[in-house]
Length: 175
Image 1 (cartoon, rainbow, N blue to C red):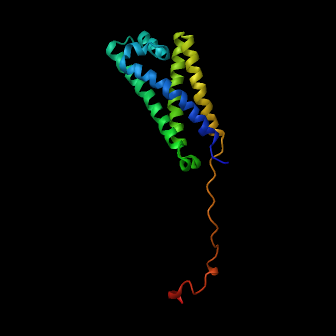
Image 2: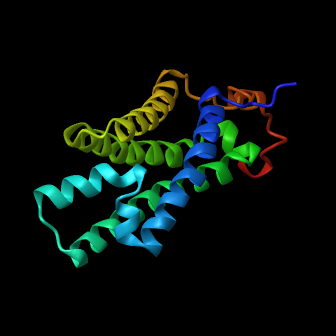
């Protein structure tokens, strides 16, 4: 049975199954308690870098935390759109869900890469491992999307190649 599941679609659904609940929990923590959420393990690199180098006050730190939560919620939204589109066979076969996945992978990779750089700069080894692992998940899925062949278009039905096959009976007004 050919179900027309592409490898990149299956990999994207698995990556979405990790990122949606994990980042939703982190984003919810940032929205409810911005200062405390900014210094939790997934965001500690960003929090330490900003507080040490920019000497932000409480209001500025809250704004940064909410912007980080908004960025993570945007990635979650694109993953959710991808999964919803991939559920339909007609969209999945034509590759119509790939755009939402590519946007989620791009934005998520930028967030993870920046967090990884900030964690290495701040000396947070556990946060560095977390962000490096998340970045490898996203980049690996993006590589699978790039390497995999695009979906083949459906073959059109055979049509007559010449008009000479039609007789005058088909076009009585022109005779």
